Image 1 (cartoon, one colour):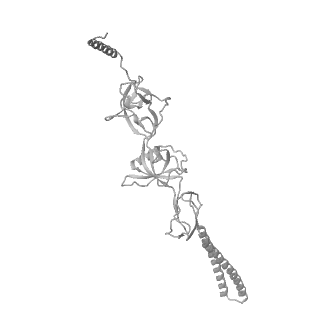
Image 2: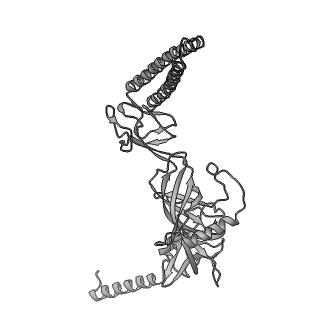
Image 3: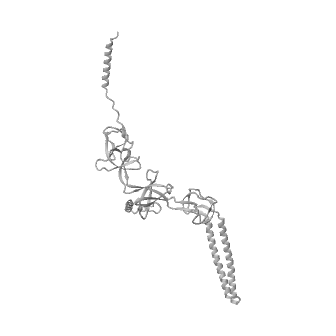
Length: 397
């Protein structure tokens, strides 16, 4: 038997009210705390420094030209290769020079033969003079002829030496070891001796190399005082350069850091009045040929002794108007704010935290939020994700 319609409505209403009361009594779901990556501040020895832009130059540069006139018969090197001192570079046609040597030798033989005859003639006339068969003037003339031939023979010897030197110059060799440029003249071209000689090629030394850069006058005075305060130990750094001279770091423009070292060995004798800077030169070992003369480099000079500094990743530093702060996780996993005084940014992405004038600053045991900062809220809990093995200093990022 069916219930009346109004009775169905009442039963349905009671069921809905019962279900509503059951749902209101269930506890609300609480989301888990967000995960954040944390790390300890890093401690590292750092020194204050100045940075400059410099350029590389060869310690020796030579323009190779011919000393004698002739046709190029052979180019004996490959463009851009490393050459050693005395290595053959160009060879001129040697036949004209060999002919000159042979002609000078023949002329010497002629003078020597005539000298022998003149010596005998002089001796004969002297014998006749004693017997009254010749005059004193004849003897003197014969003596003068002999001396003239001896002088001409000596001149012929000098001509042989000059011709032999021209023959030697027909073989153009490297004056020192280094890297050679391309050959500017090929086989068959005529070269001439003299000031208007065409350039054949160039050679530059590759190890060591010079690095030039301009330094502010006051900064240079600080560097000189720093060098004077260093102990006068002697350690080979590049040939005979003394370790007591000021050291500097350098790197290529593509390097993120300054992985190479040089020694300052020259300061110009006057300051440029227009810029207030002085030209400085350093010597850098270059055994692999990494530094190419003419290329640009960046230079860094330390201006103070290294001191311990506290570092954190720069991505962990937050801004609040003119204040800088970081988020820390305490022993209860609650996020706390800590104001800091940031220093300079290092090449590896780490930021120096300066000692505070007041306040707690950062300690090596603090846990700094480095990733997941957007999910962290001050005074709210988080789930810190710590390194599996925490070293004494955090690895550079």
